[in-house]
Image 1 (cartoon, rainbow, N blue to C red):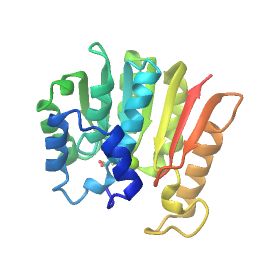
Image 2 (image 1 turned 90 degrees about the vertical axis):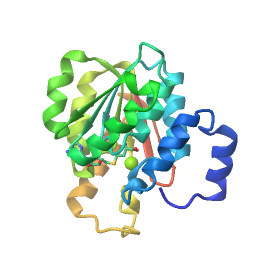
Image 3 (image 1 turned 180 degrees about the horizontal axis):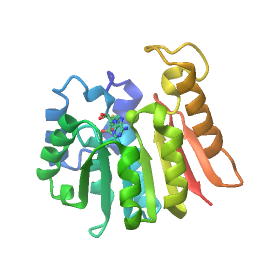
Image 4 (image 1 turned 120 degrees about the horizontal axis):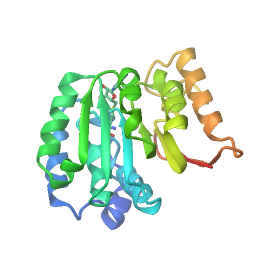
Length: 217
Ligand code: SAH
Ligand code: MG
């Protein structure tokens, strides 16, 4: 996570995740890792919880676990019989996440699978249709993940994508990284497909990184 802006700090303090002491402790441990900035921010995590609660979500698929912060936050918002399957390619990240999931009761709602999401997704189709798919892995894979999500999310369910401003590369030279034309084309297609009002009730929430939220009609 970047350094918090005052508005994010205010949002976190008033509408934040402070109600769960276990989560706060786990987050502090995760923040020791150099890659922790890839995780959603507490304000974005709150947004995900808002969606889970508000749309009656019970079955979630997450693409891109990292150390499990977003998964744990969504699991906390799920009802007792809710389930979340999270997919992670890196064995190191997957192992770190499992360790975190063991430490909180909400972790028992999570099934963490290790492997390339493109290979794992077809193997979990039988557990669907799902109420929500949260896409937060390699940006070059977003259209393929969307193809899968479109088929495996129920009518009225949600498809959510993080980092959908592609680090600013969709409107200018990326601020902080080298983004190729192929990735730009992929994220453009991802957003344009979800912006189609005949198929989705949708929005791109202008968080720092951009979060596309689409309800399948
Ligand atoms: N959702 C997490 C952050 C995910 S960061 C959170 O907010 O806490 C993106 C993760 O996607 C990284 O851990 C990376 O290893 C993983 N990833 C990248 N390509 C992947 C793929 N093809 N399949 C599964 N996971 C992948
Ligand atoms: Mg992200």
